[in-house]
Amino acid sequence: MASPAASSPVPPPGTVRVHAAADETLTGEAVALDVQPLGFFLRAVGCLIDMLAGIALLVAGSLVLTALVAGGTIPDSAFRIGVIVLLVAVTVVVPTAVETLSRGRSLGRWAVGGRIVRVDGGATGFRQAFIRALVGVLELWFTFGGIAAIVGMFTPRAQRLGDLLAGTASERTRTRPLPPAAPGIPPGMEAWAAVADVSRLPDRLAARMARFVRGADALEPAARARVAAGLAEAVRPYVSPLPAVDPETLVRAAAAARRDREYRALMLENERAAALTEPD
Image 1 (cartoon, rainbow, N blue to C red):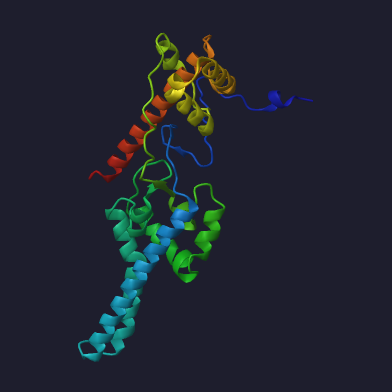
Image 2: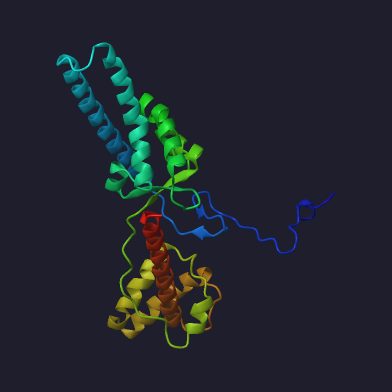
């Protein structure tokens, strides 16, 4: 009986396997982007704002049509046609035009700090906006958002049915603030920092490290050594390669490398957001 390892297919030489998480944005070049998706609650709030704006347009348009009929400007038979045109315009034409011209934005998404992008991180176009608006007639307007809410709760990036069909998702446009200033890489650790992998450090542990680095000079020597030893013990499983240095140097170097990584990720995210808003 063949072992699992022997029965599994072996990729040809030069093949690179890329494993992406379900909520990770992967470009066409198989590069995983550090993009933060907009959560379910914020998406729901943005959608509610857009629907309220649409209802306001429907009410205003209906009042105009009623006034035109009452004034004899248009015949009574044209009222129903006008209502149908108004419904199509508010539910499909206006959302498609707004999302296309604003590159994935809308009134609601502007309010909650979101933007619709392709699943590979690129800017959306007319096709994606039209599919989302067309499907939105069913999942948003006909069911009062019920289908969108159910689908969004069971998708990794809170995607609604229109997103799944159009190949889009919502991402945050308001990036988190940069971490507080911290000392740089300790002397002699520059070569290690250039190849170090600190991406697996948990956020809470990284925050504890940053607090220690900022306040270490104010601690008593014994307390400082004790805290540094405890932090170093917690840091070691998440750092590769592990340098042969004392505990405090390890904590300082890992904290600085982690902050540099976050800074580079935020700069790339800001550049992507700016590129999405630039005209073609």
